[in-house]
Amino acid sequence: MKVAFIGLGDIGEPIASHLARDPFDLTVWNRTAWKAEEFARNHKARAAASPAEAVTGADVVITCLPSSAEVEAVVHGERGILNAMRRGAVLVDCTSGDPPTSRSIAAELGGRGVEFIDAPVSGGTSGAKAGTLTVMWGGEETVFERVRPVIEAFGKKIVHAGPVGCGDALKAVNNALLAVHIISTAEGLSLLAKAGVDPKVALDVINASSGRSNTSENLIPQRVLTRAFPRTFRLALLDKDIGIASVLAEDLGVKTPLISLTAERFHEAREKLGDQVDHVEAVKMVEEENRLELK
Ligand code: NDP
Image (cartoon, rainbow, N blue to C red; front, side, top):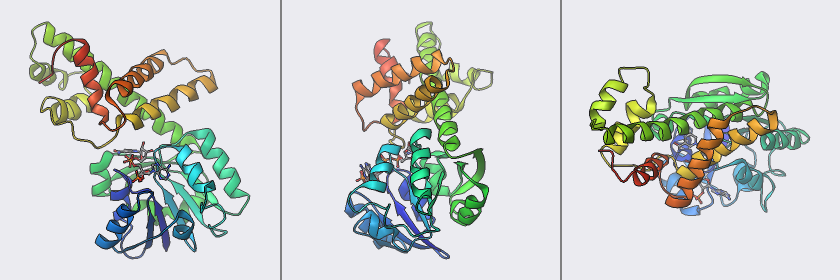
């Protein structure tokens, strides 16, 4: 099966590594060319000079880019993939994208005999390395069956969310909940620190009680209390995801004031801390506001 992979970022690179082996015949393209060349040197893969070259003759094309805007640019741009993908090929978009743009890309490709599914992932860079990602996909069952072996190479829990765009919607809401947990847990621990409770003691109790979450069980102990803050998922990308959830809520007329407030807080954190920091560093904004460090 000929596979083209576009976007070797923090999570794209480990996903692509699972496709650099039989029965796949992998070609990669990355905007910063040296990353694709290095990938090809270290894996069973070829580096292409343009998106169009990468997808020529491919059965399956995977995109893993920051947002749907970059996917659209790669579809339409100079040496883009729109005219280069063959009829009958499938574009699997692993970007955490937005539903309306995914639907419009699907419609445009469909007019040329190319199928599309949105297939955002969760499980982080560690899940990507282990090949155990959760994949939530939107589209037709018959299309999915054609790309199943590719998705199973890096996904463990693979769930059909609904028609095209539903994978994106599910991912955006999941990440909005992650963002709520990060801000609310940082606020709660700051309050407890001021009240004289050591954050480690607080977490010991919270993690045996109903206030626990992945944030309290893993992110805060491993990344905040240690002050390690490793970069695995950029804050700017989480800011984008909550934005997608907020716009979706507006479009559908659903009241989500807590998600809107968290979107504002993450936007503020992105402006203060910049585009390159990790998402968990949003905790630093809460720490600064309360003049303390959680450690
Ligand atoms: P990164 O920011 O690490 O990588 C982004 C990739 O997109 C890079 O390959 C970058 O190329 C490329 N790119 C950026 N802009 C353009 C452009 N205009 N044209 C072409 N290529 C471009 O992101 P991640 O790998 O972390 O995330 C990718 C997607 O996966 C996002 O939608 C994210 O929300 C989602 N995701 C990420 C997770 C994580 O833990 N990191 C977890 C789950 C989902 P270059 O090398 O040139 O910068």
